[in-house]
Length: 228
Image (cartoon, rainbow, N blue to C red):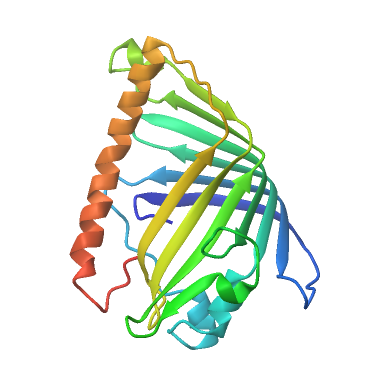
């Protein structure tokens, strides 16, 4: 989780699918509800990978590869975010997270990662898709005139996110992340007050993003410090 956010609660209703040795391990979650808030000051970064800690190894190993191959399906997921100027909620249905190769295709798990031993780095590829997403944002402060009082709502159909992670082999720390959001045809009509409210929402988040970016840059020069 980015250091600009702090989790407040997490509720998971889960069901595990038996493992088939010829296919990826899969986990099915009936419902996930998460509540989080933005931090006025970035929190301390996450500690070492729990997978590496449990296996007693800090470097990229077989345990990490097994976890990367897990396919996760969630029937319903609700994420609520509380920020200084607004509250937002995201509701997604039929979400799936799975590994793909560099061409964004399903295939052998061995080709879902690219290792470069000389540089000591590994690239992994993930795809996240969902059937429907509903986004709502409403102001928590009405002091900035009436423009902050206009709720913003968006409902879209099938969409997906393509994720590329670059990590260090020696400690599994994330060096860089690339996200590509792909939406179906989108028609979104906003009133003038809603558009102004969105600008205020973005401004509220930009301050937290800038502080977390500064923290990450300052810690990047410290090789012993975990940055993600």
